[in-house]
Amino acid sequence: MTQTHTDRRLLLAGLLAAPAAALLASPALAATLSAADKALVNKATAYLQSLNSAKGRFIQTDPRGVEVQGDFYLQRPGKARFAYDAPASKLLVSDGRFVSEADTRLKTVNRYPLGQTPLALFLAQDVRLDKGVVVTRVSRLNNGFALTVEDGRKQTRGSLTLNFADSPMSLLGWVINTVQGPTRVRLVGLERVSGLDPKLFAAPFPPARRTGRP
View 1 (spheres, rainbow, N blue to C red):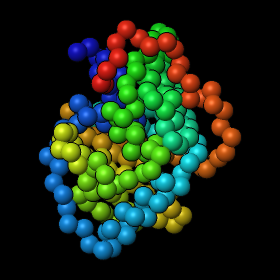
View 2: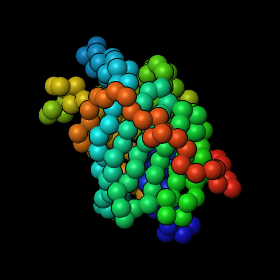
View 3: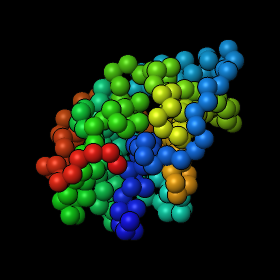
View 4: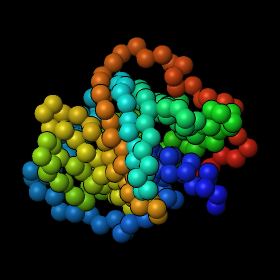
């Protein structure tokens, strides 16, 4: 695998919360959650369900410590856009059906069904943390809490940790594990908005020659 292809996979893995094929960790094991833990899960679910339209900045750090950043937009259900700052030429767009991974310099794109990426967890019409995934751990942070989830169908080995601020309630970012190590995504300046331009979520180019899983 070339370095360029590896870099592209890392970028995609970071923002899509790790496509199934890239995850590597222990098999999913259901945890016994306390009543307090379940209350936090319900709080996180309600928050994500209410996050209908938002924008902000993201900062992504790959397993080698390389940092990239850019702008993100989301419009539930189904739509999101992650545009990397130059000199990166990457753009990720979910149009509600497919996630397009584009190279804006080369004018190429690969598309993946949204439902095959964990990005669908954030963008579903009805956000569920008790369907398709298993919450295996609830951790308290200084300014909030974190939820670790795994594939409830046990088709994927791996985990995704969502970090939340408690007051005010906000999604801070997430951490995923790939074969190369952890990739961290931090959200900055997340704000609820209305009236986002539908063109933000249009597929950037016609599909490339291959379509499939990352």
